[in-house]
Image (cartoon, rainbow over all chains, first blue to last red; front, side, top):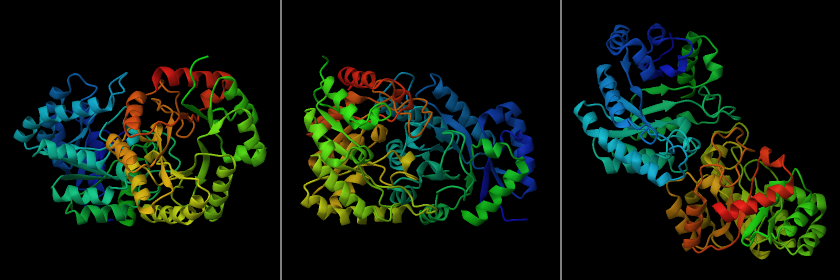
Length: 269
Length: 269
């Protein structure tokens, strides 16, 4: 069996093919040791049952996806606290935060960014008490309007500096590969012990759908080995987590997708 | 007639409706004082004839679009020197550089960025002699694979610092609006006298086509007045140049598009 050590499968990658139980079983069959479920999957299956399925398949959890959405959800603080509890219940290493885009009708980025900082600060005591680190995910600038107003690693790390303990960052190749400041900012993230996750997927040319046309590693323009070297040099040796939103890959069999993730992880990443 | 003072029309905005002569006449009829032609328009009309049309309509030229493409055109240096000569011949304030994306099959951003720096350095003596400033345009990160590997204002200004006199930057709302470093970097650009142009168009949500779905000012999420205040505070008071690549607007009459540019320039920008 090809080596899947150090690889995590974000379950969105096979969300059209498998429910949570099927996905965990398929991962376990192929030697995967880590998964990252989404909250809708968790809630559909039930939290205690999810914990049982994960443990029963010998799996560990990198991150729970996702909290955040501070700028667009009026109940975001409470909902993020619930997400922290869910992450704790399944033993997730962290809770991923996709912070939210501009509120409907707003053009005020600075204000939205302040809302995010305030939101995370409000959730943080609960997260610290639960021992669930909050992992801020800077998203590609193309998502600033409607997904996340945190758009560079430097910006995410500035947020971490301001917020203190219990918060860190997700380093996602898809979102960060283009950044001229990437290597020094990854080093900075390492120095300040902020690296919580390393997500992988490729950037296709052309990209036909802004949300759901991510590429399997090796099919696009990202230098994964270079990215990994920078992450390792910064002291992070946790799993690389494949997170692939892709109509093309959702149309293949889940077993085939997981097998290809393992193959490309070994050959390209 | 509504006030068009301080507005430049990039002729790509009406390129499907008008040839260069028709576009210049239409602009002049509506009180526009500045235009920015593209090289294909120039070459089709002929450079001396273009110069005559522009002057004959009482127009001045903000920038000539475009040089660049250092990473993908093996004859880029010579071609950029020709572009400098064309810019000088029509009295353009500057030559816009879209620097080029990753070469076919490459994943080496650092190398592509070095090729850009070397390319501009090679063209610069010719540009200085012709007194045509080279205007580096940082493009939105979404274009890093196939258009331009200069993707932030900070990166463009670092390039300017390294290159010395005769080079500056284009501040384009569409490309830069999301940048957490936008305001301090615009101030930096002002301090180092690098601001050569201020382009405007809006970012639509959703964006249906990555290349040709820019929005008329006011139809998207960009805070134009805030952007302008930062540019003015940095000491730049040149024209705002509408550059709208949009199937929607190309399908309307050219006169209507120009009228709407003037209206929105006055109400939104």
